[in-house]
Length: 265
Image (cartoon, rainbow, N blue to C red; front, side):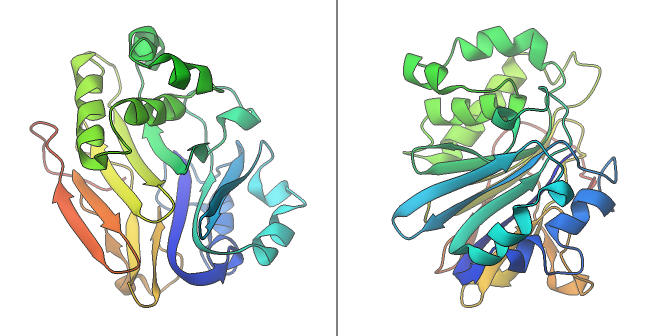
């Protein structure tokens, strides 16, 4: 499982989330406490916005702690909205095009989780992509395919409906019922002005995601709380679409079928 973090609010340097906190994303890349494995060393990346500009994108296959540019870039890049990710691969080889976040137009997207039947269902899922989106595919991960399916199913017009449709497509193609492992997914995505996040799992063990902050001081999302004061962080409820803007936050139920009682993993 990967680790991820995102921010929306008054402009700050990326280092305020990626580097400086006691349990920063960089720290989580080596010492994760709520993932299957403690080390996330299969690449990293971040996407950031600057008003109407962006997203900018930086990704590499090196472990985050080994990249000589990471510290400098995170201290120098100042943004009011960014996504960052460290990867522990479950699908696709270690390559730059398979590192998160993925971008298309104004959208940026990152994912933590697994679609274990992906090699068996990849062909019918890719057949659902219109030609321009199929041509936009660069890597081989289940994550990028989920992103492209969201775009193909109306992400620009209605993000909630697109998410519900794609989760239903995965269910229809039997990844929920016949796989030896469960489908588990936590996604964070943005169109440059609004930050969206959701958790879902077929076995009620959705990958973790926490929220901290408010509209005035800024919102931070992270796979694990970034500091010791965990009381300021709240777990994002599963099967809920969390929508964050500089004006506030909303939660709306995702209708993806019956689910059991959830356990954070």
